[in-house]
Image 1 (tube, one colour):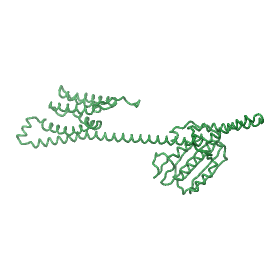
Image 2 (cartoon, one colour; image 1 turned 90 degrees about the vertical axis):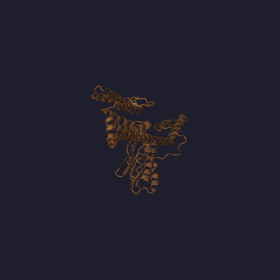
Image 3 (tube, one colour; image 1 turned 120 degrees about the vertical axis):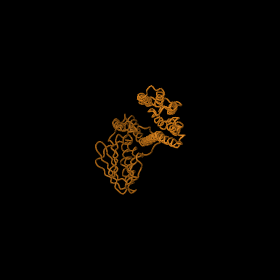
Image 4 (cartoon, rainbow, N blue to C red; image 1 turned 30 degrees about the horizontal axis):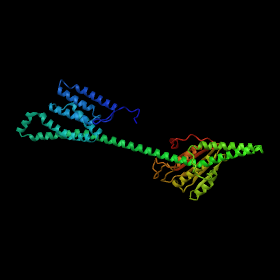
Length: 429
């Protein structure tokens, strides 16, 4: 899929690369400026002008088609030597072309650039040290036996050419390596992010299915009570009219509670889910004793007067305490006290579990510590607790500081309609 904000790209074929039109416009503009500046030094010299045109064309297409640019540069350089021209300012384009063959081309073109460095350096050394001196000087050197100086001059020119041309090609190769490494890191980063998103989606989906199974019995029980009360009131209406008011009162309260439970049951109900009564806050005594029997020191205190709490919130509170205590046992310092506080208010209940971290340790699922689970790795506990609190109409916060880890959940009193199904981003907040 093409990014709407991206520049249109020039399609590739056998000779060209796929580059953006912006890149092509920039390259052509640079070549045009180079041509106009170099043209100031051309004084009615046709071979020099043609050499400038050839190198300008090579400069313009160096990123669009490095192979074509290299071919044009070779033909232009050969024409320059056949015309007997000296080194020109336009010859600097050769450096840019060699850089492009290493930085932007593949396989054969990149190898052709490297071969051009060697062959071009040798040809340039011979041309500058021998041909440029002319036939007369060459004959004079042979007659005087000064051939060794000419050979050394050729070697020196070739070495200098190798250094200059090779440096350009090497810089291009380094640029290509750095770009490839950056793209590789970005691809790896995207893969890790996609893996984390998929892992989180699986965790959330599994937790929603578990919540649906937990809530199924509560909702089914409420609807059964409504049906039974309605049928009983209809049958007893003639003999005991007062029973109708009592039945309607029961139906009203039960229906309201059932409506709240149906609204928070946002995932598909599972008929093959858990059977038997679901745990509530009154069952925390048994849970705490069970955790204490494992050696976990729990300081449990209840503050305030308990108020009415919907069945779904009761279940959510129990599961949150269960998960937090389990995390404290697995990842916390079991030699120090775990504080469990239930604070009742008129609006609901705040459940807080605070435990010391093991050093080095992992504070809880999804939280990393020295020597513990790697940062960014997702555990199943925290997403599940957040999901339960949100679907019960409440909230959950997690804090890790000062060597301690704290989980605080607020659950509303009475019957509250559940929120819209939270998104993955909200679950992972």
